[in-house]
Image (cartoon, rainbow, N blue to C red; front, side, top):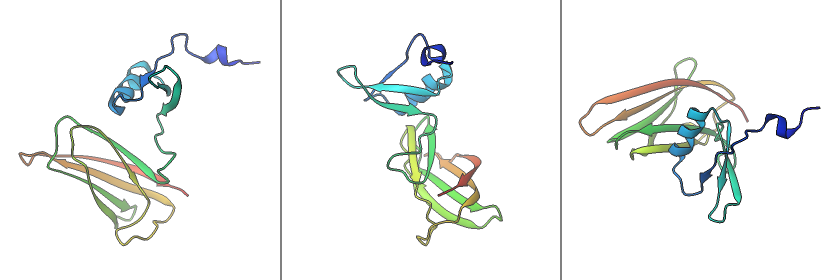
Length: 141
């Protein structure tokens, strides 16, 4: 029978509650960690950061992006597989690690259907230079 001690790490890595999410993300990628305990000021575990940020309080799709410097504009465009625009959302453009929860509503406020969607995150820096990242996601309820 497999026991917890057989699969757990010998050296437990943690982050502090006040650390930026970018610190946790980098540690998880560098150390190939899937779940990272968060400890409070007294050293007690108060949360766990997971590769799947979606969860409590979101109820939708989580988008994570990191900006090396502040952007003049960041836009999230969500498209159906047929190419129809579902939503266009302005996102925060502050430098560092950013997280946004799309509530699953289209531009008119209606709940988008379950299915596959494409998205594009486009960031424009103060000089007008633009960087675009595309991806796909599955919306489920």
